[in-house]
Length: 199
Image (cartoon, rainbow, N blue to C red; front, side, top):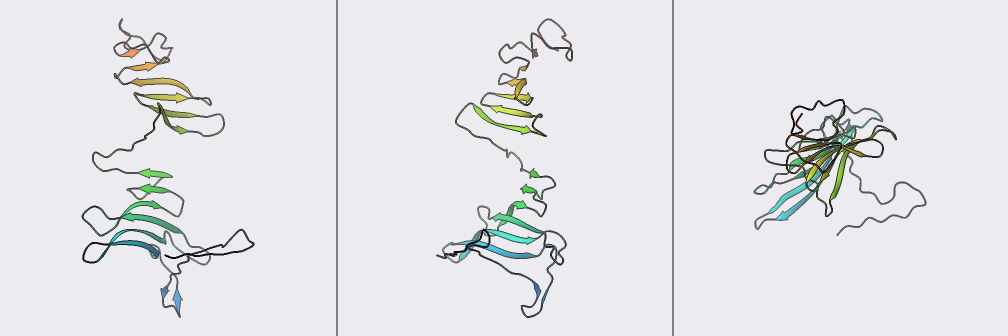
């Protein structure tokens, strides 16, 4: 085991594990380049023959470095079942973007393979809401519930549309279900067609 301990009357630079990297030599270092790995934390397990690599965290350069300019990234890598070669699973780039399964091009970027899904699990009916908030007066989101999907808008979230487990689409209500669009008051934006409530 390794323990690093520090006592200091300061808010910065307490216990630290530091990795220094350069090109050139230790005696004559030269500037690192975009894509260089600066340090790696690696975990290996004995497989009956040798110590095989299970996972690692890599710290690297994510842009063009210069004097007082060192854009960085961190990647988290794991070996798949049947392998001892870690593959990148998650990346935090120099702009703070996070990518899971993909190099990010937005603040949070996820990419899944065939038949893979993103799941939200909770022990109660009210699951987390996927929301967008521009300021204190703007709130929009998708409410994920046990048996339905809800579209909500407003600073105090109000349900506007519900897709029930039966497949019915409910607007401005959450209980009545008829074939098609289930509504008693559809408003001026939806025209009622037929007698069964479809539109």
